[in-house]
Length: 428
Image (cartoon, rainbow, N blue to C red; front, top):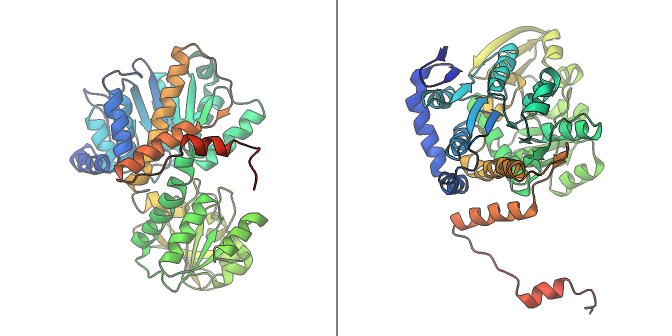
């Protein structure tokens, strides 16, 4: 691993991968017209000049486009990956070669993961950008003075992080305002559904090369991410089984044509298991014991606690590497269960994450939200220490630009129609 060069402070796997990373980033740029338009618009006025952004987000080719957009807008950026197995080493090398402070490599330990976050904080950030809230938690737990002296606000990318930050705000423990990018319609209903659905199956297929048609695919959780996975699995001919804890959500899955079972029931018949809940211990020892010989288990939730591998290890007599991101656990009764990507995000650890086209909208929201925080600061507006939603106007603007880049036009209400919609005196 390398540490420093004359251009900037960094730690990546191998700087020689930079040329490969540059090609990947160029491909992403060609597929992200909304973010590229924002980048072009603001590189002249540089509204983020003087602001320091610490980011903790999966280091993918799409993330590199976002990082470069921030830099073009005038920001100083320091970055780390938000998962030990989600960094693309070629992309991180390319950013380092360009003089960007980045601390990320594929396969880091948990200790190294938090070391990287600490390195990003050496710039004493004004703004934070998170995916999972580990950066925010580190500031709150180890550097609370940063929230008072430096940080004016942050953004959060994913469901798990937003949920925890809202809990912090409700307890009065949140020390600076955070914008919930995840809860934007142009993020939640697109990135989470279509991005997670496609990239999760991409990761499974790269790690296994199995035929999904005809398989019993068990999806734990039917939120936006789980629904996306279930839809794509069904589209490939799988028999989809959903496990849920919420009655209304389970009913939606049923009416969408999915079979709903408890995990105890599903464990007996599933061929492929995919957790997408954000909750720990979704698959534990008793479930592993009930599984068929040859069952495949993976996770697409943010943290690696959904599949309890400690339990599986305890009932196994041997663990063997089968192929990249695929380990065979031979249980004491002779049955085998195959675990993908060590129970971490299979779509990023075993594949490339979400397609660039869908991340275009998510990262456009990140860019505009960071700009919103900076502008509020410039205008002297004191934001409350709570979680803020994305304004609907921003959602509609981003969706409108996306449609335009796709060559799609939509209708507009006439003035008479607009008036009619608000006319409560109109009847039959």
